[in-house]
Image 1 (cartoon, rainbow, N blue to C red):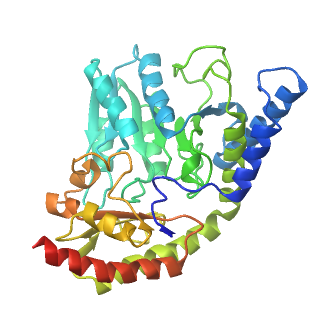
Image 2: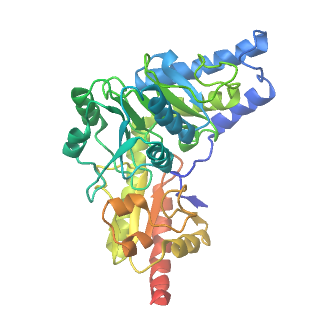
Length: 383
């Protein structure tokens, strides 16, 4: 099997699975309990918080655990809207956000908030001047994705953060780092980030657990209420096994970030250059190979329907996706590729290949070999 759909989800590493088995079967106490079992789980959770906080340069007390990226994004957006509504009701985001941000913003528009949707160029980059001009006194939140989940395009978050705080120091800056965390260096102090979300299952950790970094002193409201866990900010018994698994996954990523980046870039380069050279009427969507994330490659195969190509590859035990996994079952054109100016025909033939530390150059070469055989056949029958 060749699995090139890692932006959708990754398989858990053996170390993560071992840690979670230990937690589920032996170290299974409730971290809110004051007995020995509970204190042992609390210690594991704190250890993960130390790893996370060190990795992104924040305080341990600013780390909060969630069920994943969607909850983190929703909490950041709805919590800020409620906590800062007396200051203003203007928010800014982009046209290429993940649905977890996009749908939350649209819901707030229905409640009377004003949202400015930033355009992107043909490479998927936002217009910095448009952002600068959009920020005003009543702007309470700017939410921008760091690495796009469909194209791998990287936004200049450090420059964006600087501009936001120069224009309005009270504006909260949220970054969706689900596709970036553990793969791209993040310093929340340097980047002026107030809120940041990530999800464990994108980095060979477990599904159902994620993290929200929330800068100390923010008026962001909690929206899961109950027993007052996590400093009263996110109630519910903590997922001790999931958090411990997250800690193992993150530690492995941080230790191997540079090595992984180099190795995975070679995989992406091999596949991308091979497709462009050996399969006619193809194009890379997004920024250049060198400037975008090595973990994501979006390619249009003209005169081919992406869903048909996806299933043809699947029959060869090669797994890819036709855009975001969150949108792939809906019969709608990708809002991300639409915002970048691609035609409906170009979007219809777009395939996303996404990689992780367990992939190899040999897999890229095998995938290319199958594509060279499959694409001409599909084009023949598509006429």
